[in-house]
Structure formats: C-alpha cells, structure tokens
Amino acid sequence: MLKQRRLARVIENMERGHLEQIIVSSKESIYYLTEIWVDPFERMFALYIHRNGRVVLFGNELFCLKPEEGMETVIGKDGLNPLIDLAAVVQPGKIGIDKSWESRYLIGLLELRHDLVPVNGSAPVDFARLQKDDEELEIMRHASRVNDSVMQSAIALIHEGATENEIAGQVEKLFAKNGADRSPEGQIVSFGVNAANPHHEPNNTVLRREDGIVLDIFNPIQRYWCDMTRMVYFDHVSDEQKTAYEAVKKANLAAEAIIRPGLPMCDFDRAARKVLEDAGYGKYFTHRLGHGCGLECHEMPENSSSNEMIAQPGMVFSVEPGAYLPGQFGIRIEDLVVVTEAGCEVLNKVPKEITVIKG
Image (cartoon, rainbow, N blue to C red):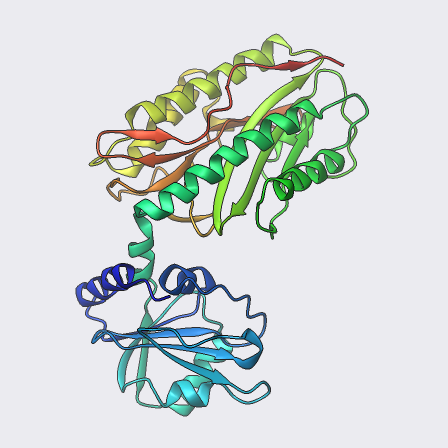
C-alpha cells in the first residue's frame, strides 16, 4: 500500500532540492513508502518517483509483487536486463540516485540513456524518514519494550563458565521467542578486556571473576530496530571499574537531560563528552555519542560532535557514551530516545545501576 502522506513529504523535499525525479533503491526506504519488503539480493529492486506524483515500482517475477493502488508496478523476467524497463520510464535531464543503488545498475542505465545527469538523490527520502510518524513511534516503543525484556532475561542467563558465543546465541533465541524479525547483524557480547573494543565480535572467551560484561543487543521488530546496551559484572567489581562506570552513567544521563527540540545535535554529544573529560576518561570515549535508529539500526541523524542539525520532534537516536581502556576494560551504557515537543522520551527502562552477578 502506497503511503500517501509519506510520499507527499518526499515530493515536498524533492521540490526543495529542485529534483524532478529520483530512483529509490534502499529496501528500507521502499518499505517506508509502500509497505512492501523485498530482499532483492543481486536482482534490481527500485522505486521511481516523479515530482508530478507518478510512482513506478520495478521488481523481478521472483519477488511475487502484486499491483498496488496509487503506483504502477513493472515486473521483469528473471535473467533479462531490468534496466530496459526503467530506461523507458525515466525522463531526460537530472535524476536523483539514492546512495544504496549499486554502480552496476547506474552505469547500465547511463549506457542506455545518454541524456541523464545523475546527482545525489538520497535526501528527499532520508529527510522524510528522519522524523518518525505516530505509527512508526508506536512500533519502536513496542520494539524497545521487547528489548527490555530480552535484556533482563539475558542478564539472568549469565553464569560461571559461560562464553560470549553462548550468551549471544541465547540473546538471538530470546528475540525470536518474543516475535522479533530475523537479525542480519548478530549481537555484541564482550567479557572483560574484550569490552575495550567497542565493536567486539563474540567468540569463545570464557567468563572470569571480576569481568565486566557488555551486552549491546539490537534487532528489528516489525521491521523497526531496537538497540540498547547495559553492563553487569561477574562476582565482583573493582573500585576502578565502579568509578569509570559511574562516569559513563553520569554522561548518559547528562545528555538525555538536555535533549529537546531546537538544539543542535552536537550539543548532546558535548554534554556527555564533558562529563567524561572532567572525570579523566575523555580520551577513552572514542566514538560519537550515538546514531539515528528506525528501519535501519544506523541511520540519520548522527548524534555526534560535528552534527549541527537541529533536533526535531519525532527523531529517534541512541545515547551511548563509553570509556574503553585498552588492555583493561570497556564500559558502555546505551538508550534509544525520541525527541518530543518538550524534551525527550527514553525508550529503555532497564535500570542503569551497577549490577553484580554472583557466581
């Protein structure tokens, strides 16, 4: 079903960007506009939008697409060049191409149509997706409630002799049991020194006494992502770990306390970063404060010190300060938040107090 209100926002953005026509190839963006989800693999899947309201969906017979009111559907035969059909629809001149379209398709289209001028065309859909509507926000609230439940169950599964792979696998099963979609990403479970790598991939490391355990768990649910990080300690937590943990928690809360419409995104990063700098951990906070979240786990807006975009109601992004001490330990605390009319709504409810799991 073509989402007319969302399409209208995209066309408004096209008008602002002086774009007559665009090609959308991101499966997430196509779903956002049509509620049709296809993993095309190596086959072409594209949505053509003209500023006059014409919408044409191009797919393959293997996708089992059905005609939809409000747009044309062109279904290509498997094994034939799908660009011939697309080349017959696009108009001469400038055409916006989104950042997801593979170069082999763009080059192929330009070989068929020498009268086209490709330009970056991601902005009209990206900026429409930037502010979630009420339907999207309800799905994301539900996803975060599931994430809270999965996190609490995962913490309860930690035991002596556990491995990172074991806990990560249990998290995947918990998500599936709670109705989540199949995740293409996996989970981040880091024990002890491994947590000093922010994007550590789980392995067969065995849990040891005094290990801090980073659980960064995320999954799509009804196509929209949840994402949260909590830390617990096994059997004992040292004074140094406590000090660092409290600094990271304070940074997380400091950023969330000032989030509201009208402020530049960079202010939120600076609020958290200042807390860690004052505590002596500034150089160990090695990444941006967070990332946008929605149909993709990482999307606009970037929550960073360099992003001067103004926060607006409906934006959803992560707040995840960290401190990573090489060869020692790492700490991260992450929530998803929604910018509201007056401030922000924190979607995750799992407590952030220091927790020690007794062996």
